[in-house]
Image (cartoon, rainbow, N blue to C red; front, side, top):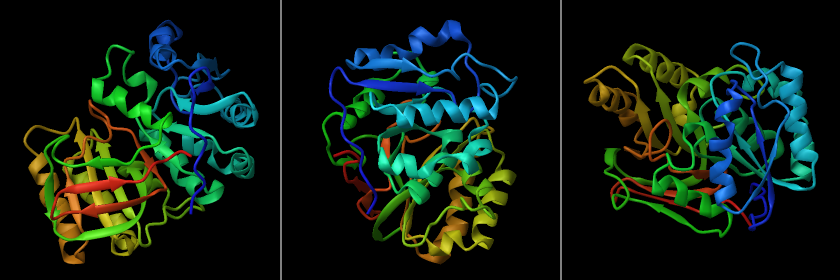
Length: 303
């Protein structure tokens, strides 16, 4: 069982870090307004505002920033500012034991998928797949996106069904297991490394942005050849956005082609990923996926 971090309280301090791509500093105030609106104090990481073209500073700077936030007793949660690329470049130098000894909320998605996978495996903690602060200012998030931050303050079970958004069953059945996964591209990039995603008996979340049908096919095939699909217990299909017009149904058909022969319960259409609303959920907790009822039940992610 994964370690659940302690819940937040109004007045707590949280850290904001840039572990992947950079964000222009003039946009920073509106990006942290959401956290301040929740009654939190915000500590800005030294990597925020740094730039190395497509990276928020050098690898050492981003790594040191993460370590400082983990080891700072004042910081109760770590929120990633922006995605892009770069998280995997520091994965092999992170002090995972330090996070195990100082478990705290870690929140982000997209490129951060690589770190979600690493933290679950080597720090044995629950992490949170939720919108980056750069996804929008305090007034740009939908009410549903904002509401999901409340799970960090008061633990509650998430029940995602068609009362939230329309869903589509691709493969019927039901399954129970630990929830893992995230961005399809980043999950595939873990293969063949010490951070390779473990799907055995787990419910796997898949989402992505801006990929062609050929690339999606190629990545699913790589997961198939690595036996990651057959080892999973079921699949939660999040949002596939910024893809060419008219091929979303082709994506669902492609997923059916890969997953139906495996008889793994699969439901598509979850607003999780590169979309708005982007519903924040914990990874590393037990979930029940009922594809017949189109329902995903997720246990709380904090103590």
